[in-house]
Amino acid sequence: MAFEMRAYQFAAWIIFLFLLAVAAGAQLIGPPVPGDREVRNCVRNVRISERLGVSLSCDSWYFMWLTISPRDLYETKSARQSRPGVVFITYLLAKPLRPFVNLPRWIGIPEPPDRKNHPGHLRVFWANEAPVYLAYTGFNFAILIAGFWLLLRTTEPFVPSLPALASALSGRCWRQTT
Image (cartoon, rainbow, N blue to C red):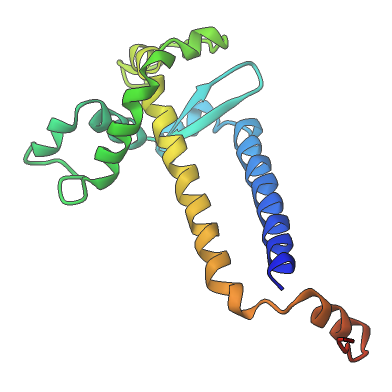
């Protein structure tokens, strides 16, 4: 029974991680929001290469800024003041990623064009704060993986053993012989 459960969980993890990788890749390949709709949809496109990019919501920059400078949470109008947990976690995650500050240049990410609907600090921000984006990405992947682990642990008592499942699907009663 234990071996069967491990095989089931191993297969579930392989499928989950494969689908997670496909979904992450699809986010990079997906079409960017057209330039004339960026402001209306509250989205900013960040190009990674000619064909790859991500579309960030307009408050993403604010979250990343708070990770760079958590003391700004104490401002009187800070939207994250009552819920600072994610900011502090990503702040701690971004510290060991500092050696990757030049990652955008290493992999050839073009600097975004200066356009009226992009924040003025976008070019400098993306060039200097790639570790913060990596910290948020890693944190979100960790939440997805922890959620899937919790799902497997929660459903484990309800998963039938493989021989019982095979006999139920074949319509025959399975008996264990001694």
